Image (cartoon, rainbow, N blue to C red; front, top):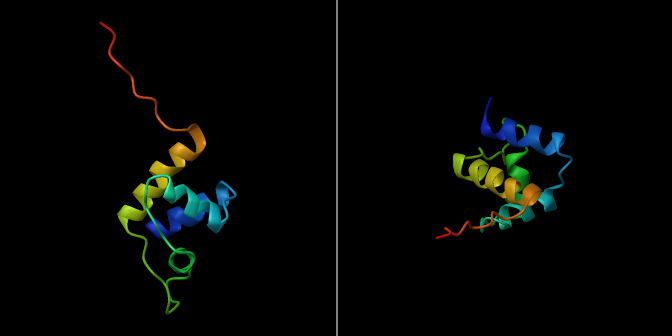
Length: 79
Protein backbone atom coordinates (compact mmCIF):
# COMPACT_ATOMS: atom_id res chain seq x y z
CA UNK A 1 0.00 0.00 0.00
CA UNK A 2 1.44 3.36 -1.00
CA UNK A 3 1.46 6.60 0.97
CA UNK A 4 -1.11 7.93 -1.52
CA UNK A 5 -3.45 5.05 -0.66
CA UNK A 6 -3.02 5.67 3.07
CA UNK A 7 -3.76 9.38 2.65
CA UNK A 8 -6.85 8.61 0.53
CA UNK A 9 -8.18 6.10 3.05
CA UNK A 10 -7.66 8.51 5.96
CA UNK A 11 -9.44 11.28 4.06
CA UNK A 12 -12.46 9.03 3.47
CA UNK A 13 -12.49 7.50 6.95
CA UNK A 14 -12.29 10.88 8.69
CA UNK A 15 -14.61 12.67 6.22
CA UNK A 16 -11.99 15.33 5.46
CA UNK A 17 -12.24 17.87 2.66
CA UNK A 18 -9.18 19.14 0.80
CA UNK A 19 -9.30 22.51 2.56
CA UNK A 20 -9.34 20.73 5.93
CA UNK A 21 -6.29 18.69 4.96
CA UNK A 22 -4.49 21.89 3.96
CA UNK A 23 -5.36 23.41 7.36
CA UNK A 24 -4.12 20.27 9.14
CA UNK A 25 -0.80 20.54 7.32
CA UNK A 26 -0.57 24.23 8.23
CA UNK A 27 -0.72 23.24 11.92
CA UNK A 28 2.77 21.76 11.53
CA UNK A 29 4.02 24.60 9.27
CA UNK A 30 3.81 22.53 6.09
CA UNK A 31 2.39 24.42 3.12
CA UNK A 32 0.75 22.70 0.16
CA UNK A 33 -1.49 24.13 -2.56
CA UNK A 34 -4.87 22.78 -3.56
CA UNK A 35 -3.54 21.63 -6.93
CA UNK A 36 -0.57 19.83 -5.32
CA UNK A 37 -2.95 18.08 -2.93
CA UNK A 38 -5.25 17.13 -5.80
CA UNK A 39 -2.29 15.53 -7.61
CA UNK A 40 -1.79 13.23 -4.61
CA UNK A 41 -5.37 11.94 -4.88
CA UNK A 42 -5.28 11.20 -8.63
CA UNK A 43 -4.97 7.70 -10.05
CA UNK A 44 -1.37 6.67 -10.57
CA UNK A 45 -1.88 6.39 -14.34
CA UNK A 46 -3.02 10.04 -14.61
CA UNK A 47 -0.46 12.43 -16.15
CA UNK A 48 -0.71 14.86 -13.20
CA UNK A 49 -0.31 12.17 -10.52
CA UNK A 50 2.26 12.94 -7.83
CA UNK A 51 3.53 10.30 -5.41
CA UNK A 52 3.01 11.15 -1.75
CA UNK A 53 6.38 11.25 -0.06
CA UNK A 54 7.11 10.18 3.49
CA UNK A 55 7.50 13.82 4.55
CA UNK A 56 3.98 14.79 3.44
CA UNK A 57 2.38 11.78 5.13
CA UNK A 58 4.42 12.27 8.32
CA UNK A 59 3.46 15.95 8.53
CA UNK A 60 -0.18 15.12 7.86
CA UNK A 61 -0.24 12.54 10.68
CA UNK A 62 1.48 14.95 13.10
CA UNK A 63 -0.96 17.71 12.13
CA UNK A 64 -3.88 15.32 12.53
CA UNK A 65 -2.85 14.69 16.13
CA UNK A 66 -2.90 18.43 16.83
CA UNK A 67 -6.18 18.81 14.91
CA UNK A 68 -7.92 16.10 16.93
CA UNK A 69 -6.31 16.49 20.39
CA UNK A 70 -4.88 19.99 20.46
CA UNK A 71 -1.32 21.13 21.02
CA UNK A 72 0.77 19.21 23.50
CA UNK A 73 1.27 21.02 26.76
CA UNK A 74 4.86 21.28 27.90
CA UNK A 75 5.40 19.58 31.24
CA UNK A 76 7.55 21.62 33.61
CA UNK A 77 9.59 19.72 36.17
CA UNK A 78 8.52 20.38 39.75
CA UNK A 79 11.24 20.67 42.37
